[in-house]
Length: 321
Image (cartoon, rainbow, N blue to C red):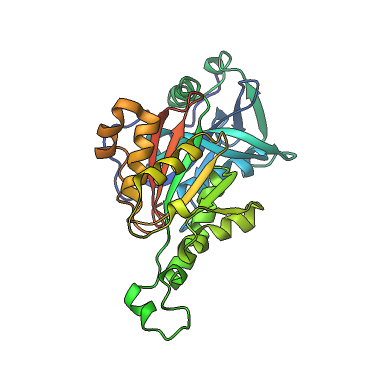
C-alpha cells in the first residue's frame, strides 16, 4: 500500500468546526462496476477524486467539477455517501461524497496534482487505496447501487404579489405572469448548476412565468425542452386527484427528472410522492424526510432504486456551500 499523506489524520468524529475546509468528491463507477481512483504524486497516494470548493461554489457543483478536472470524466451524481472528516495540514477538512455515474470521458493529461487515473474493481481496491475511510466510502457506494434522482423544486424568489399587482405592467393583473426578482434570477443560475450536477434529462414546470424562469437557464444549458404541466400550477382548488395523476406520470418516467412548482402545491405533491414511492411508509415520510416546506429555489432530491423506491433523500438550497 502506498505511504499515506502525513498531513492527513485518522477520521475524526463529531461536528466539524465552522472554519473547516470544505471539499467535495465522488465515487465514480463505470458500466463494468469499476471505481475511478487517482494518484497524487505530491502525497504518493491513491485516493478518490475530490477537491476544495471554490469561493461561493455549491458542493454539488464542486463534486462534478473536481472529478472532471482530476480525471477528464463528466459525471452525474447519484445518492449521497455522507462525509469524511479529518485533519489535513493541521486544519479540519470535511469532504462530501456522492456516488456518480460516468456521462462522458475526455482525454486525461497527467499533471503535477494527478499523474494517473485508473478504473479498478472493488475487489482490488483494499490493496490500492491509501486511506481506510476512502475504502469505506467505496463500499457504501457499491452497497447503495445506482439510483435515479427525481428533483422537486420550488420556484426561485419572485416579485411580491402586491408589488407586481401595482407595478403598472399591462400583464400585472395576471399573477401567472409575475416574474422572478433579480435575486431569483441569480438563484436560477445556481439551480442550473445543481440540475446539471444530477444530469437532469427531463424538466417539467408549472406554466407560471416564475417557475419557467427558474428552470429555463438549465434547459438552455442542457439543450432540453421545458414541458409545461397545468397540474403543477398554483390556484384554487388544488385537486389532489390531478396532482396524484401528475405524480404517477413523473414517477413512471425512467429518466432523471426535475419538476418546478409553487409553495402551495408542494404539500399535496410531496404527499402524493410519498404515497407512490414509499407505500405504507408514506405518511410517516411526509412528517420527516420528505418535508414539503421548501424555501424559494430549494431542492428536494429523491433518489430511486431500480424498483422505483426512495432510498435516499437530500435537501439543497442555492445559498449553501
